[in-house]
Length: 475
Image: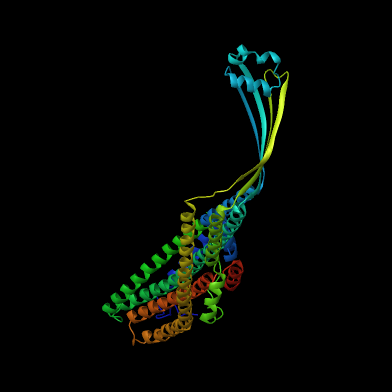
């Protein structure tokens, strides 16, 4: 355990006053406990584990929910593409009145109300107005559409896969953000505790040194130099407390406000297992990265769109049918139907060559994007791996520095009591001890987050790794 203070002077004077003060404090504490019952610390503020916190972040993360909506849109577009195979059925209804000779003649024929008298020249040339109510059903069945529907369905399938890989990327991003905030919260809570302990020890040292200064044992210059160190410790302690609150608020926001009053729990561990060789990480990243897989799917979709344009010259064949009913007064009606096949083929389409060329260039551009992404992934993974290696080597050195600083404080206390070291020397060593503790904690957090970042860059970070880290934290 670190040596935070030492009994430098045993002052006999004032012991009776201290004993009397302690008795008064005990009586006051008993009275207050009767009015305000003490809540056990374990129930005063609940705690949340890293695994639980990560689950809350995944549920709330707005970017992930937005991506889920994009996945649903891709599913809808896939269904829309598949509908090209299905027949279409339409219902039609109309009503019209006309005295146009052709229109009247047609309406009477459709209503099956034509008579011999209607062939009189006067009635043919100047017929009375005729009203016609018409109802019809139309069906269109695609038999062959130049593989347009097939390629559209396959392209939509690839786009759906791409959006799902985007969802995986955002899940890793959310897990990484949750882990970063959680670990930083643990770090600053630990720093705040150490800073408070060091500050209390420094204040006790200064109280004793002030008494010695008044008696001429401690030089005034040494005393005021120690006060400068003590004030810097106070400033750092205030900063640490503010940082704790800021990180807790950030954690609450990241979880959508669902951890109000809850704090992260656990202790910062030493780095985990070795990362492995860099070539292995590069191979895993190129094989498992969701963004690389997503871009592969986009390229596959673009290949389908290119095929679609190239096959546009093929014929299209549809079956069609129509059943209709015509009446004047709904007392009698005439029914008829029409059925057949319709084929169409573009013998000359001057825009087809341009459309094909455009799709080919888009495909070429996507290929360049893929190579650029693979190069960027290689650089990111290499940098992250080197960073993890450096952190792994720094943590033992930082831990040894903490032990050395702790031993230095322990050894300087008797030297200070003998007058061979000043109060300024003692407080400066306490500050060095605090600095080494802060640096060790930062390196531990950076090492853990660096490994998680490396896992994310390799496309392998998931809830299992977060649960493993949660167990290592003891949360």
